[in-house]
Image 1 (cartoon, one colour):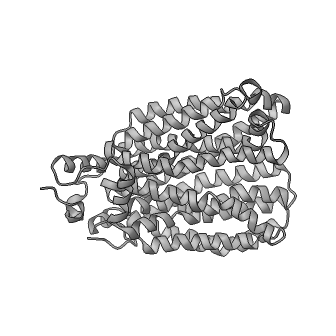
Image 2 (spheres, rainbow, N blue to C red; image 1 turned 90 degrees about the vertical axis):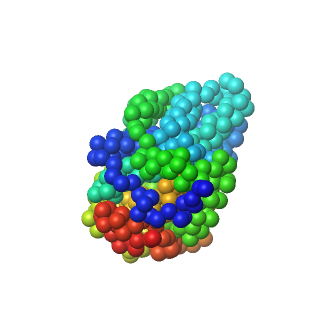
Image 3 (tube, one colour; image 1 turned 180 degrees about the vertical axis):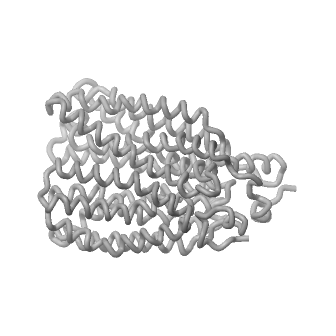
Amino acid sequence: MSTSSEQIPLEERRQPSGPTRQQSIRTSLAGGIGTVIEWYDYGLYGLVAGLVIAPVFFPQATGFTGVLAAFATFAVGFIARPIGGIVLGALGDRIGRRPVLILSILMIGVSTTLMGLIPGFATIGVWAPALLVLLRLTQGFGAGAELAGAITIMNESATHKRKGFFSSIAMSAGMGGTLLASILFAVISSSLAPETFVEWGWRVPFLLSAVLTVIGLLLRRKMVESPEFERVQAERAAGQLPPARANALVAMARAFRASPRNFVAGFLLPTGLNATGFVVLSFGIAYIVNQIGLTSSDALFVNLAIVVANIVFCAAFGLLADRIGAKRVMFIGIAGSILFAFPYFMILQTGQLALVMLASVIMTVLGWSPGAAGHTVLMPALFRAEYRSSGLSSSRELQGAIIAGPTPFIATALVAALGGQPWLVACLIVVSQLLSLTGILLGRPFISARDRAETPAYAGIEPRS
């Protein structure tokens, strides 16, 4: 007779020997390249959406209408993400983390490369925007499992002593993708005449995604499956665990029923880092140009400073998590960003580039980096290994679609409501960080006393037996 997963003591269910350092490094490299590609592709599309997509694919929609059409195709990708997270997350619990990550990187990379090959509206008419939307849907579907899947396998494959650092690389590498997209866009756009860039120059960084994809596939082919999933498969074969659910919605429901409070905690936990990141990197960059009066070149320098700082500090907070615990690292970020939310906007009002850059860096280093590093340790612990991929992917991506994704729009509406003043946006940052705090306090991670003793990043978490 099969034994329910909830009836197996945690001490008996954990892996007797942890992953090796070599496996942790290899998995981090292979997992990290996927998040580089994901954020490169998404960042790239966001950069060209307002400049290129409208005239090339929606020439009949002029002015503001054309820009809205361009950003509508941008939003399509975010609509597809939670669907991909639910479907591919469930698949990750059935066939393994590694094959799903190979599939996701293929979907993202091939879709982005093909976007660079689509003829414009002038050549194939309405088929041009139709193909663009189809590729954005495919890209978003694959991305729905990419980051959550990378967090899962990198966390499961990390050594006990460095679980915080190796897990945080998933988020740090993502910022690397944003940096790469920004640099390539700046170099290519500045090297070509505006009309040449719109004609064909914008396609170059999209086509270069094929190179990144090949590199990512080569690395992921050499990546081994996580020890925890291999243990789950062995227990399923022995009849100790029920088989994985084939229906993705049933698999998500199983993850919810196993611990409703943990699923809700997984939904809330990344709110602060996601919302703060979108406020500073998306809304904030537009705000300093449109409201404060800085130039687009100034905004580019601010953007680059933010990204570089967070690549470094995300990994640094991962290392700190391995000393004081991921939970405490997140507390530092929540407290710091709440305290700095209003001073951040006060400093922006000065219009001084150096001060604006410094304030923007501090805001994301406090509001994004600690949360980004800490949640890669805490969120996997909210779900048992047999339904972890489904639970983590679905809760995280639903949060992104419902709360984080609309943040720039909400922030813009709040500024408009106050006649250009940003103080309600500061309140938005505070509320989002309090939601993350609620998620941390609500969650009951599935760790044993032995897990906590062997894993410094679990410091401050009560064992659950």
